[in-house]
Image 1 (tube, rainbow, N blue to C red):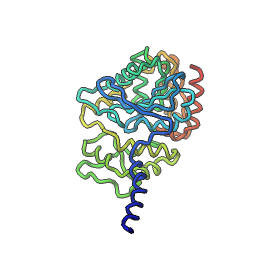
Image 2: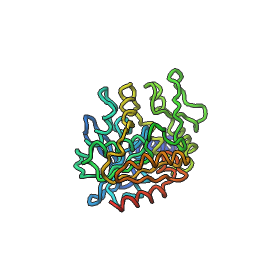
Image 3: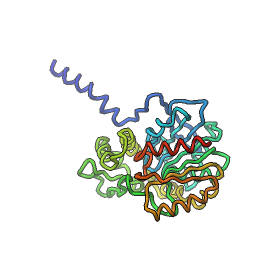
Image 4: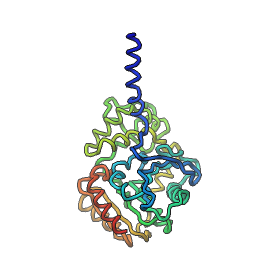
Length: 316
């Protein structure tokens, strides 16, 4: 009898442990796959609003579609929102040997076509911001508007505030850091190094996320942790070039002919001036710096980010 009681107690605890490492979709949301540009692209859809304008969201390196959750909650009553898992991320298919710096841009264009969206609003963060920027520049008939959250500009890396440690653990010694809240997370590295990150304990990733990002909602941290366990990584030089090449934006800003909004992280006066000069090339564009925010500005300053986005979206 005592054995049965212990087993029953274990079974009561088991679902919590299992669900902690699975993608529990927010209530009212759904997910699915689209075959586009030669792969299955996985996506999440917020509470359906079929009569409202469509928004397609594209996340940054190592994240997944659910990393948009708290911002999407703020917008989903007025828009029909789809959040992609980028190629090599989340539940989408991995990179292929044929990928290059055009691939991720073509993924978004193909997804829009396959889903039969008519001029959706494209929103991207970091690498995703570069992706939607280039879609706006190179495929002018696709989007109704382009929104870019802290894209890389002019060879300058994103603000370091709020960015996870990018120093990868050495491939020859694939062991997590001693302290569970100080795990390193890398965008690039050998396959062995990147898979080490997939094997971090979910609870330790949570601890790291909370320590590094004290301004974030706990939901943001949970999905950030999940995305690191799902990250396929660019295991080949070709795949690495596909990701880095995506961010080669050239003069894309000047070619966007639809309304465009760029949000940038807090920065020094010198960096703000440089950002303003870059944004001034947008024919129909606007730049807003989010005071007090780091690279993940939609997590650091969710209310302010939402306010700026709504002001822009109401003009469309």
